[in-house]
Length: 370
Image (cartoon, rainbow, N blue to C red):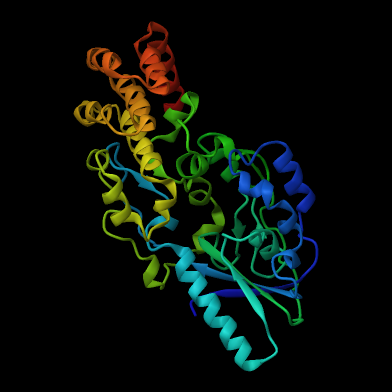
């Protein structure tokens, strides 16, 4: 069914639950309020499926293999989003596997989850032979590294549990050192509020100014902690056709994406994980990346973005213009200021037009280059 490994754990209180509660209490979940609301369910899988006695954890490789040349005017998308939405691919396989189990054992009942339900699949996976929790908070397999998805089936039948895999991170801190924003604040602790994946996918507001230059040309997610992990030298190219790169998903042209309409966004990304970012959030990421490019050929489309229906996009475009060049940006933004009535956009325009912004934008850009 496409899974390269399976592991079994017995149902009990979720491992690391106290750690999870502290993480929530420290606010590291950002605006992902569903994590807070579903905290009780995440403690005990029986609140999700009352008859659960065993947890079957399954791993599916998504590593596409290819690595494309980087370019300031091309957008970087996390590898897991190069193909179809993994939720639909994996959930269908889980359901097929559950039906197979029920044919073998008619009394079996179960419930399937990818990562949309209140089941802590990584924490449970780390209780099995599938892998261990890396310092970057991704599960790592000795056989395949960390480029894989997890699926879970809660079963009402008792199964023999695995021997838990050992932690082989040792003294390695490469993932921590590689994180562009320092979001891995300590081993095994990721602060979502400054994580590029969170900021470009889950976060709905303007990306904080002090982090914008660190985004670089990433427009959906970030793979830096996985790219640098030594265990990923064991990664193999996936054989799952659904995860093969779709046309233009690997390094799309940024300039052509600025003017994408809501309808075009839905048509292009409806069956992709990118759809979760929403059209406005995705274009916000695109114009931020264009600002980081420093390329003057981006100025005309950024000027057009100042007329976008989304205030979030217009505000981000104002900053991006200032980040590229203060001279043409000033004239363009003065015109935009006269017609604009949204407080968020006006505040961003005022910031870029202020003399202090020139110094701050340049300092931030220099720091990110360093």
